[in-house]
Image 1 (spheres, rainbow, N blue to C red):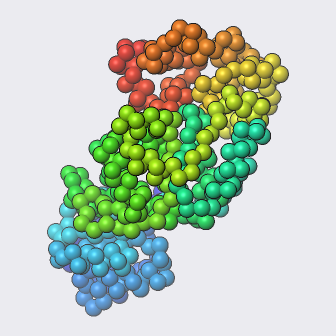
Image 2 (image 1 turned 90 degrees about the vertical axis):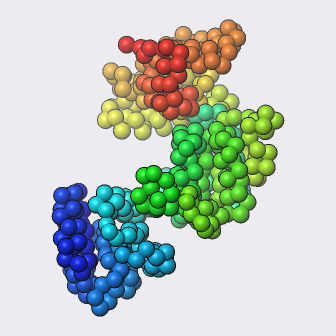
Image 3 (image 1 turned 135 degrees about the vertical axis):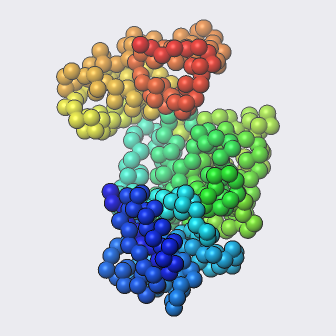
Amino acid sequence: MSKSILIVEDEETLRESLKRIFLKEGFIVDAAASAENGLSLVAANVYDVIVTDIILPGMDGIEMMSKIKKELPEQLFVVMTAYASLETAIKALRGGAYDYIMKPVMHEEIKQVVKNALRQRHLQIENILLKREIGKSYDFSSIIGNSPPLKEVIEEVRKIADTKSNVLLLGETGTGKELFARVIHHNSARKEMPCIPINCSVIPENLLESELFGHMKGAFTGAVSSKKGLFEEADGGTVFLDEIGDINLYFQIKLLRVLEDQMIRPVGGTKALQVDLRFIAATNRDLEEAVQESSFREDLYYRVNTITLKIPPLRERKEDIPLLAQHFLRKYSQDLGKNVTEISDETLSHMINYSWPGNVRELQNVIERAILIAEKSVINTGNLPESMRNGRTFQHVSLEKKLSIEDYTKAFILKYQSDYTEQQIASMMGITRKSLWEKRKKWGLSKAQ
């Protein structure tokens, strides 16, 4: 995909140097020596990013930016200034600039800033394209099932969706907590604003603060430009904190402050920013027990669970299994381009009698796998994993053996590795593929051939 950039700079040497840099990066490049020339080029062309000096002969860069943004409010600007003045930078940012850089311009720095701006441009376009579909994807019909336990939760969601209250979703791994979070968001007054999911167990601890709060340029090694955090990106919308029970005590204090005063301070920043956020948190841990063990702050616990919803595991709503199976059958048959249209009665009976330790996510994986290996248009028992065919579940066997958590995890990996991919096993366990690899390495577990 072609990328276009306009450089507005009156100093010829720098203008030509920047032009060469971005031509080498594969950009379509136009250049102007004045704001007036820049305005003429913008009137005739479309640019992904405009890089402009602030001090120009005649009209300055900020005034030019203001004129352009009246007609093209989404236009991205990066401004350059030789004056190391915070006031100048703030004026540019308030005028709508994406970022600023100080002269003398470092080649690697300006390339990185422009790449970040293009990423922002991509997100803007993606948001426009998806906005119409988002409401359809997360209306109440996206929650599949008619069982009494599920209906009870759905009715609670209807009552609390359009409120400002924070919500805590409890449930085992794979029960669909993120789906419920998105349904809550998209049936609230915040539905036109972002809903940003954050898996607290995946982001490394040393990056969590920067990812969520953002950082200022120069805040740490590698921070060549300022970056908005996910909390600021979600301003006006909803933040879904998945696996909140996994964050450390240090960050719990910072999160508590955001929940209490709706203020965030970017790493390296001197001023706090006001945000308007609704928090939906989720965990498969017992937070009350974690509070008793002092691994989770009591004050944070009471902040996140203004409203608590418990998502029932699949074994407690078995009448929903046929509906879910048919839903995934249609989805993956289409996605995988296979003409698999039915599930045999015997196969469905095995599914209903199975305990589903991985819940809806495991059912989803089973159907996808079955479609991949099915040789006919009907899924039969031979397409199911062995544990489902023999009627004796891994969970039952493990309970009889009274396995420890560590031994259970080892046995789980070894039991299912011949039937599922590494990603599917990690998903069923509620961990990342990296975490699964680390467990294999720690325990010396080789992959199935």
